[in-house]
Structures are given as C-alpha cells and as structure tokens.
Length: 187
Image (cartoon, rainbow, N blue to C red; front, side, top):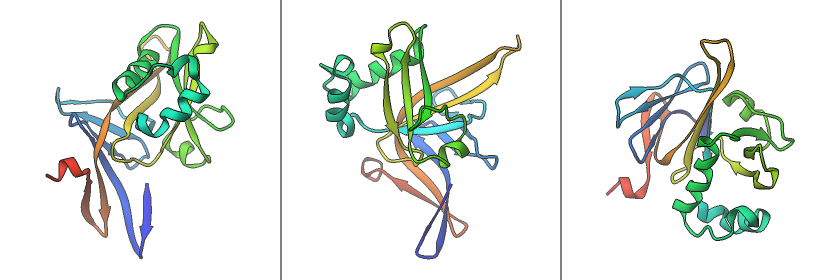
C-alpha cells in the first residue's frame, strides 16, 4: 500500500498492536502476523482490515441493529459481541463489499468502494449484521485478518482473527522507515 504526500512516496511496511503483534506487509500483497507474546510467526494472511473503535460507530450500530447492540455501552462489551462470531459454531465473519460480494484479498479490497465485515449467525439471520471497516490502518482500530486455505483433508477452510488495537503504523518514506505512533506510545 502506497500513498503520495508532497512528492514523497510512502510505503506501508507494518502495523503494531497493543499486545505487540506486528503485521508485516509482504511483497505479494498478503500480510504476516508476528505474535510477540508467544514468539510465533503465523501463516501469511490474504486480507487485513481494521475495525473502527466502538465510540465511532456506537450510535449508528445501535440504531441499525438495536437487537444486537442494545445495552452495549463500552469497547469491551462490543468486542465480546464481535468475538462470539469468530468462536462459536453456526456463526462466522466474512469480508464483503457494498453489494455483498465476498472479499478474499487485500488487492480485492483496494478495488471496491467500501469494505464491510459481515457477522453472520447461520441459525438466526436476525442476529446477523455488517460493520464498515477500513483497509487503511488507523491508530485505535482493531485488526482483522483472514485467509482461505485447503486443509490436509482437501477441504476449503477459512482462518479468521480479530486482533488488538493498532498503536503504531510503520511506513517507508524515501527509503527511510518512519513509525507513526499513538500519543500513548510517545510518552
């Protein structure tokens, strides 16, 4: 991912979360998570997006999906709801575009106008909802990464992971690495 600002070219290199995980952008367009707590390097992921902070979407989410977000008052409760869809049988999370088409890769995400995470309850559609996400990392947003793969039995599988808050974004600008830190990390 690149951006241009006053003639200089910035290349996104990595994102670091509050628990020390580092998501490194690979040359092939995928990302790879290095989990600091356990010193693990995970398989490359096809898609990395960022979930907005609850305070930014609280009002709209409560109005659009009152049965799901009624009574949710803080970030911890919000994340408990989201994590339920990644952990329980009969529930899943899929990245989609504004037309409901599944987004499988970072490249596909760049080619559409908007990306959402569809939180799907396969047993009760009334408990399904969509949240807008960002393909650009933002301080305070949570990471979400996913990949499709074929397991040892030849079955198509999906791995998905809701990560921690982004606290640092690292760009390379004119061949120099420049971190962008959150105010809390700068103290």
